[in-house]
Image (cartoon, rainbow, N blue to C red; front, side, top):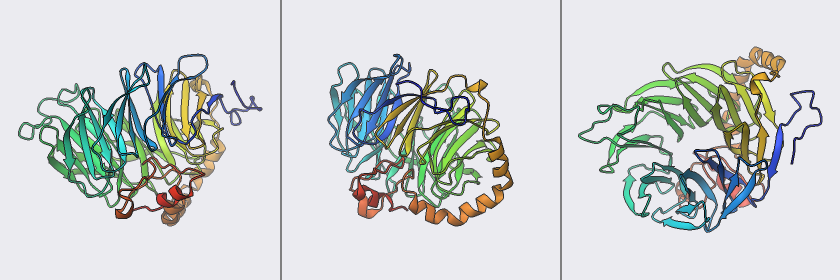
Length: 433
């Protein structure tokens, strides 16, 4: 559909918009891209997953995956298959070539929150307080990880044959393959894949754990929480190492790249941290709402925000490179591939943006950045005072934590989604722990 922007001479006013895909009939909750960057998969409130070609001149819908009975929360692609997790309590496996559902994974008692796939196994987390491991080929549930006292959110699997993990790194009486999980019960846990039993409980947070990551060596766990902090842990010993303090709101998303960690928060900022020391080296300012997703790509940090915008920052300097304008509701997910940025929003659209020539861009917002630096202490103080109210008011782009009353009910996904046309779901989503 071409590029938008009537004031092309001013980079601050350009949208870099290439195309809008409006085939979905509900908000976009999640997206994944294939290893070769040729297929984008999106999961929606309309209960469907759609497949998109990304290497064609125009992005085209090449498949519709229908069968779920409720909205889709999470998605992943492995080889020729797509896996989706839904509020209908099931995980489904789809053939990309035929768009047929070839497997239904039944067993969870509440909505499925997150998915990871290792090739041989599929791991899922749920509001039913468990994580499960499924055989990728047969769909059989081969492990149930039980111990969390509230819903389970992020998952990480560390296989014993990981290239970055030495044989002696994980050896609890022969336990080598490790599953890590984070929960609304304020804890993370490590699990033996062989036995399904808890190995270590990572205690210290005073709020729900919403996101996790590990260092490249697989020895350090990083957890982000609604208590505004990020913490690092020794995975083998279970000991807390560092507390990353600075965010004035819930930590919603994070990614670790080499020795740096990048996070997004409901305090309307993104931050860069040195993983070894817990020091904040950059603050990515300019957001007007919660930062719901973050991505690092070739020295650039991309963020999706509840203010309808996506942004790109220089990772080292913290300066804003581009703003992507066009969505009319919160941006919930994004992917970067082959000079394009793909964003999914609760306005029911996927938008495609041009991110070529980023290194040549004239950075804008320097005057604004200087003003922000002069007011930084005042801004942080104000955010700390207003945060409790903001965490309730800003239901769009916040992590949703269930309590006993909504444990069995459908609540939108953990990436902070609110449908503009669903009053009932909006009421559910402002019940936070």
